[in-house]
Image (cartoon, rainbow, N blue to C red):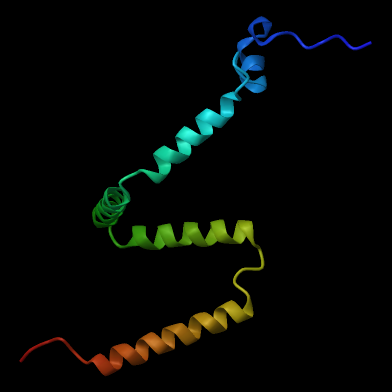
Length: 114
């Protein structure tokens, strides 16, 4: 015969959190819901502005080589997650996009004024 589980108030705090509180609600449900609400409710424009300011200042202070270093770190991270990246198809698509942009820029002409 199995012994019934101990009442929540008799459990250690960690066990109580895992099994739910005294009123039977799960600890994680309230925490997760609150975290999601806080995340969604952020001022995303302020977050973007803060990140832009941080990275532009960092690159300005450390010179353009910092931009290359960051790009290389991102490339290495992508390769760790997918060692086959970039595929030949990815490279072809990237080349097409660059050629398209180059043609648009060449048609736009110079912005210099005489």
